[in-house]
Length: 166
Ligand code: HEC
Image 1: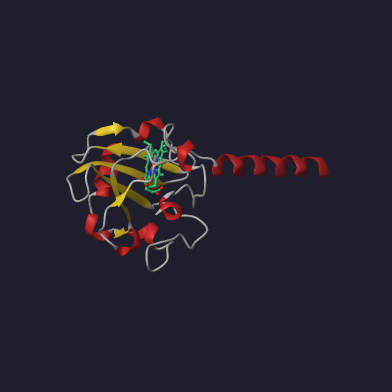
Image 2 (image 1 turned 120 degrees about the vertical axis):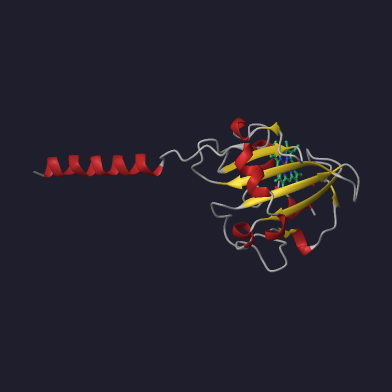
């Protein structure tokens, strides 16, 4: 009797482990692009539209502007300067607008989208770089292989680099 209930318990335990790791959806570049386009619902870093010179350690030159969707913003302080919750919740989107010159035309969008169980997540985020018209430069299907190393190095907040550098 004892042995069979231990067996039953181990089955229940194993099943719940499997369920926790259930693979979620594959997040496409097209859906990331669409989510990134509701610009007016986003909050800009430090609540300002100024472009910032990209940090020398950055992959994305020359000037950047970072914005947060409402789900990401909920985890941040009023001045949109720092993460105050322990981490960004699922559904958070961070878009970095990349400009060749300050005030010049937009050249690229670099996107992080938090979905911990996405089939194509890399360390809990989905990563993509797009042309301003949505054409893919670095696809979300790559699982952030190019992005995660840098983003998890140095001082970061849930892999976000901007707060410590700007
Ligand atoms: C060589 C290091 C490096 C690599 C590689 C890199 N990044 Fe970044 N990223 C940075 C730095 C530094 C910042 C801070 C803002 C700045 O100065 O550009 C940043 C900022 C960002 C931001 C704004 C949120 C934040 O973390 O501050 C997004 C979104 C982003 N990167 C996406 C990507 C994506 C997508 C890739 C992979 C295609 C990638 N990054 C690869 C260094 C890197």
